[in-house]
Image 1: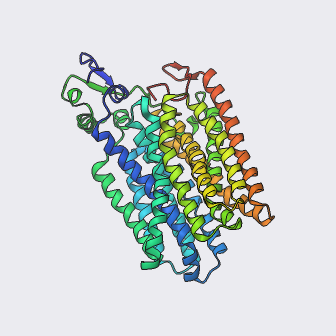
Image 2: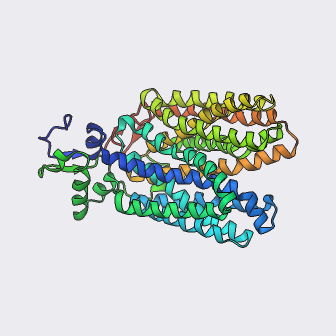
Image 3: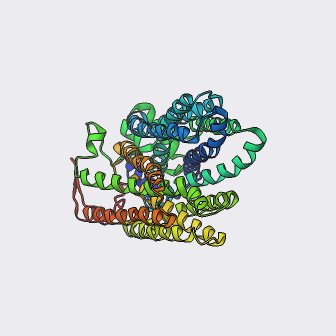
Length: 468
């Protein structure tokens, strides 16, 4: 490893990751984390596509099922907070394992429902697993990424959600006619349980977590993991691996609002909530809005697939841009483009031209999902390692408020007979608001001084400190 001096007896984990080539082992870690987010996206699509068939099976109105699924949104909120905090205490890997098992078991049980109440219960419990799986997957992947490419790697992992949604739509079109709606939940339940076995057998624990815990057998595990990343260092018995992040006593949630982080946390939560609101307005209501404008079933189904395609592409490239340029400027431009694209989508939906709708669908998917993904990439580098799981879990959970508001606001505006153009233009303003909050966050980070027990750090750009 060229950049690390072998004479040094103490080498930080962050330095090892930053100065080593990105290894095949790190690709494996990030690929497994990508698979977890992929299954999250698959689940969201499966539930939405199966809903009309479930309504027929239960002899219930779709609106009643919609309320049941909305109640299930509380599951991810609880899972993100609780399992995120437990991950900081007991480790990322095993909380990711537990999350995948919970998610898989209760998704599978959904295939056997006999009432709306069972549907609501199983979706709530599956949501707890989903809420813990995604933040822990992103956190673990981020901790194995070099600082120079962390935003891009996190964004690429999060691209699993739109990719899973796109694949879920295509699979559903085949499975439902041939094997019934239950087959979707057999697939959606067995896949996470299989993934949980892969997590248990193949995924390592966070190096920062192992070094911070500093137990005898953990030292052996650290050397074993590093032997897969930087063999020369692992074979040097005189080298001791350390963490530059001091584990400060106290409740992790409280620390999100101490040591100079209070305003950063509030602004970050606001940005994540606005971004997820925009995403769910698009994902929840785009088929309905297109149908309201006269699109056929085939047309709005294809348009939704194009949205997911644009979202998957943007998730990868937005992260790369954030690694290369000022991440705040990249995201600010992204949210302004989200405002413009959603406004244009509302106008174009009434044009009657499917080509126009298809192009605008891809553009909306790129701008809105790419911006939302970028907020999560910033969130992963906003907190030190010992509270990162808690920080990401809370950001992910609070952002769910946006996901819960979007169906309610969209439904209310449609009930008031708003046109497609009016509805899209009004909701697009959230993009401008979020861009404005990003300006405040950038100024706060640029001039703020974060005081810790051991050092004073003045970050010019969020995420530039290699020690976090």
